[in-house]
Length: 170
Image (cartoon, rainbow, N blue to C red; front, side, top):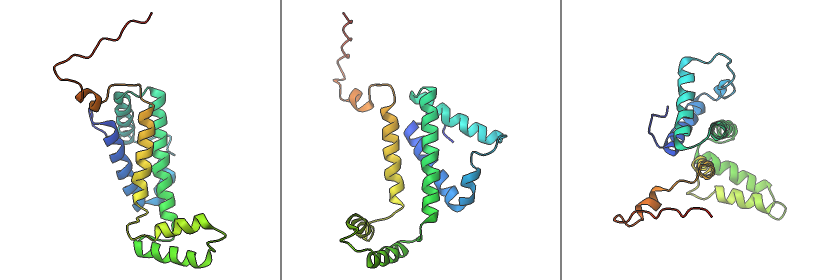
């Protein structure tokens, strides 16, 4: 659960990773996550803290609702997809991809062949796709925040110089 003052991206990343870990062990729970009409006080506190974290970051209530829904949809969907795959280990992935390559003609399915070859690289891990997708979502959500000076922009200013006042509109 996010704590007051916690960076929203770090809080959402932690929430996504911990939710994925729990649901990965209990995939049957995905369909129950938001189905109750009478959620527990702990669930209500959690949701309120997540919304509060997003609101404190600058999301309006509509943006917080979008972020909440998007994050949950991504995590739940990834868990369902991950649990449905015919492999759980890198060795099993290698075996599945190699078998598929034997039955999928490269001249008919060149893009699938390329994807299977990508998955057969020793440094490939399907589980790494989760973090990449999560980064894309967080980056997209951040783009929806009202423009605020970033820490990087603020730290690049001359420390002895005050920022210029904006000129009044004519």
